[in-house]
Each structure stands twice: as C-alpha cells, then as structure tokens.
Length: 345
Image (cartoon, rainbow, N blue to C red; front, side, top):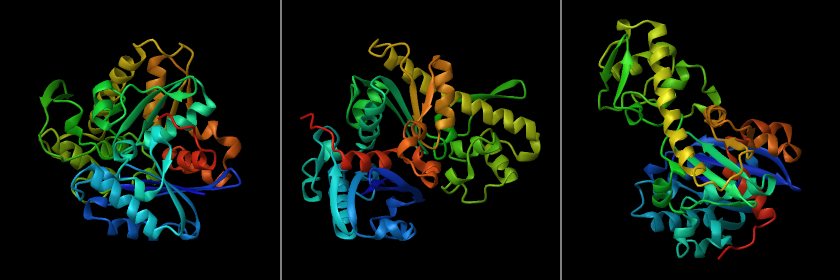
C-alpha cells in the first residue's frame, strides 16, 4: 500500500507493508505549472513509489491556479493518478470514505483538500480526544478529535477558515507581510513593505528552527539560503539593507515574526477550545514541517504535546521516522486504506 498526498507544492508518499510504515518521502512539486509537474516529482522519488501497488490518494493540489476550479483539479489529479500509478487506485473522500478515481470529480466537495480529515481520522484511532495541529510549509490545520472521530465544525477550506480550523499560515512559504502590519526594530515600531521580500522560511532559518530537510522551497528572490542572503531578505521587509543591522538585530526581528505567527495559531486554538468539547487533559497531537511551532502552541495552551511519529512508533520502521510526522496525511491515508474507516454519510 502506498499513500499519496498530492499538494500544490509537495508530493508526499508513504510505503506500508504488512501494516507497518516502511518508508516516507517528500519532494517539491510546482503543480501550478500543470500536471506534468507530477510526472517530474514522482520520477524523483525512490523506485518503490513507481512499482505496482494499492495506491491511496489524498490531495490539496486541486487549489492550484492551473485548474479552473476545485472540481476540475480533483478530476484531473484523480485521473492522473489512475493513469500513472501502476496497480489499483482509491481516492480519499473524507467523510464519504474511499472512492474510485472516476467518481472523484462527482465527489469533489468531499475529496478536495480532505488530507486533514485523513490525519484526524488516524489520530482518532490512537487518541479518542485530542487537538490535532498539523502545521506545514503553507497552512495549519487545527482539528478537534472527540470520541475517536474528527470533530471539526467546518469541512471545506472556506468553512474551516471561518471556524479557525484552517489557518492559512506555514513555516516555509508564508510571506512575512501576512503576519503583522508592523514590527519593532531598534526601539521603534515600523510598518512593513507590502512586498513578498521574505517568507517564514527565512525567519525560522535565522532562528535555527527549520531543519534543512524541510526547507525545500525556493526563496522569495530565488537566491540562496545562506545566513547573509537570508538577512538581506529580512532587512528588505522593513525597508533596510543588511548592513543597517547586526546579526542579533535580524535574529530578534525573525523572532518577532515567529511570535506573530504563534499568536495567529493561538487565537485559532483558543476559539476551538472555547467550545468546551475537549477535556482539559486532551493532548495536542503535532505533525507537519512546523511541528516545532505546534509544540510551542501546546505549551502556551498548557496541554501536553505528542508527536504523530511517536504515536505511530510501533508501526514505523526506523527509516520511516524522519518524515512520518512531516507527511502525516500520506501515512494516514495508507493506513486508513489498509483498514478503511466507516462511511459517515
């Protein structure tokens, strides 16, 4: 069984054999350039990803602007999977269970961006009550789990944006200007340049938080990721050049942006927890490239943090551990396909 998460910027795959996760990988995928990007990304994966198998597919890539709308994206990605993945293919439709690729377009409201539901459904089998925080390169999913089931009020992206269950912020690609209108610098509060000069990847790179293996996307200026180059981009956000600040100044500024992002997530979590549906002792289950931020969120909420890979440890081969938390939906959809959830209707 191979689980796939076809996103707009990454392809993630997880190999499951005998109920055990043997390998997990992630590669960049500029899907906005069109479906051929999937061919290139899958070609860059290890050989097992192209061998005959049972394939379980979830996606968020239907959002990219190479498609006319979500239904078109779902239809095309499901069709690509059926045509290019050797073996059998099932598409995860969240609350509707698994469907055949040719049925995915008609089920687009259930299929589109349902990868969060797969991870939450898997976590629910391990923790009957929890707050799942999956913070990736681009977005954050905050999903309450109750009675072993995803307990989200919203389902679509639009609904979850309204409920705080989807926070469109991540630890690599989010433009820093999206986090705050102004920041402190050397004793004054300065407005930001309304340009995408730098992203959260720059901030967390300076803070030494972002592992190199997770830092897979191009920088905003398409230049390098050295500390001096990163400082140049950060300085431009406040209309300055790098030489106008010290290394300590730029680290402090990066910390300001990190705190601003954490506040966005904390506000969303507080809204969800204010419903009173989760017990006080329910943990925060963390995954995604930004799980280091999710762990800080758990501490701020006063709840224990449990990493997804730790929960899955009995079913993880040692070599699968490094990316199991990063690629939670791919792991989840593979394990769910091996033992499908009941249809919720």
